[in-house]
Length: 302
Image 1 (cartoon, rainbow, N blue to C red):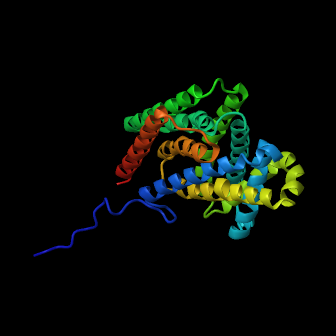
Image 2 (cartoon, helix red, strand yellow; image 1 turned 135 degrees about the vertical axis):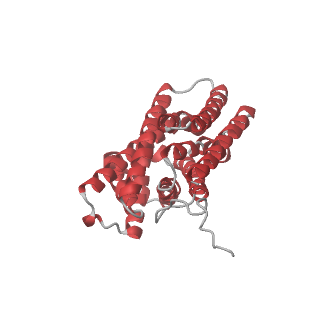
């Protein structure tokens, strides 16, 4: 006599509608890293004309317009809690981007991201409840340290103000991780992201509004601004919002360790920033941390 076995627990993962598998969510984070850092490298072409803060504001405004037209968020149905989460998300987006662009206007892209990444790394360490997660955090921090050392050794000095801006951007990056997760829980779809971009654009409007005519009247500048908005806002934030719904916050923070790696590659390809042996070792450490955290997350969910 044979009986039908019930489904194995490892197959039926606790996955609510709208959630992705761990592997798919991790792939989205990686795609976000690539898009964001190549977009940041592209944005530096606008700095001589607009300045760093105005570039960040104009980029966020373009992304907000495009995403709102596509998504058409149903804001009238949102409650007070949802609006608070969206506004906090927009606040984090505005200052994270503004200070980061101010940093890469003064110090190399790879160095700025390595310094900025201290924010989400420390957040991951604080939120972690597993000794294994702390190992991955430590491995990623080692990679960040080597990236920073390699960048410093390649320069006579680093602009102190640029370093300070990167550290401040890192603090708001940690806030971004928390607020994006909150919006992902409370607001379905990408409507929350669309309105958060509107909030961020409004916050930076005082520094960006004066450059609108200059950019719109020059097809080359407009194309650069649109490319930056798509690569550095629309794609990465949409990908990360989808991923953060399916990954624990500590794991999401560790997976973002790919950011300095991709930033170093983008700096080398687009900004002629060479990669030395220390950077290759750092890449290996960071990739190992990312893979390890992904495997741990899949085992925990099963």
